[in-house]
Length: 183
Image (cartoon, rainbow, N blue to C red; front, side, top):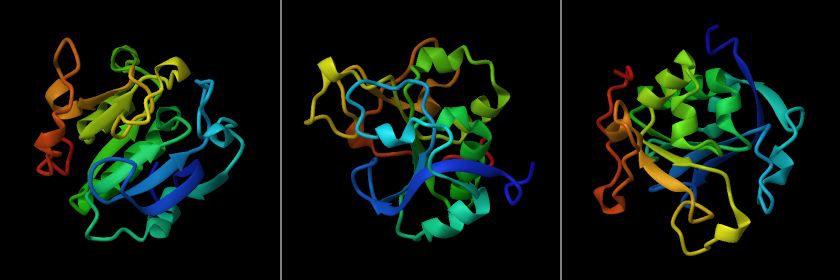
């Protein structure tokens, strides 16, 4: 299905954020989350029928993508429960040389076992991925870009094809030179 025909259930859009990943980023909060982590700060995103259904092109238009942005962050809820929509937004970001960051309650190891061609393609277009559920017992407000110590910031491009995830070296920045085709 073409992006102009694909719709996604979203909880909200933030055109510019400095707290949802490195640099100035646009953020899309996906609606629906199977994880339902106790202590989650986005509980309103849990219900898959909540929020609003929009065409991907309308979501992109509402972002008013600023050329000063580093990229787009896909958060939630859980973006991987709507992988086609996440992929369509990632493609749009890559066409304007933006990078992609994803927050997911799934671990890298769980994602690796999903055997989904759509998620595999999405990962090829993703620079950083924060994985794992929020665990209230591991909560740490001092952590950059994540809420609990169990969550990892993974350098996706360095991790693809490896047996274990490669953690992001924060001082290394994000690879802005990812191929726009995802190859």
